[in-house]
Image 1: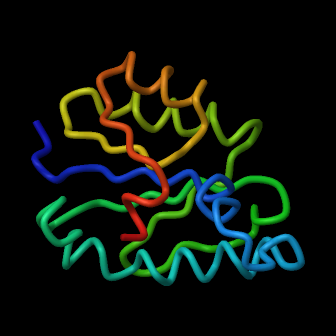
Image 2: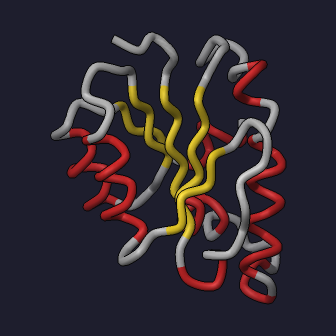
Amino acid sequence: MESTPLLIVDAANVVGSRPDGWWRDRAGATARLRDTLAPVGATGLPDRLPPPVEVVLVVEGAARDVPSVAGVRVVAADRSGDDAIVEEVAAAPGRRRLVVTADRELRERVAALGAEVYGPRWLRD
């Protein structure tokens, strides 16, 4: 069993949770989120998630071409981002899996697979 927690971030949902002009450049906003997440693998999230952490950022639509960087594996959804997130959760049944999204339906789907679910604020705070 893999002991490193898997943090899966719904890029579109997290980027869209702040009215900071992301709609003018979705790929740029997603790349900024990715870059913010890059150190999390080594540092964890203070008082919430100790390191090491495997960070996965699921992207779709206009952000599909945002590449992975050291510390963040970017998964470009073939279909819906929600389905890709569910697939990531299902592919790691023996691990602690944390999903960051505010999407109610997605929250229910991944919780049914045993994942912990947190909203965008949990990640930003």
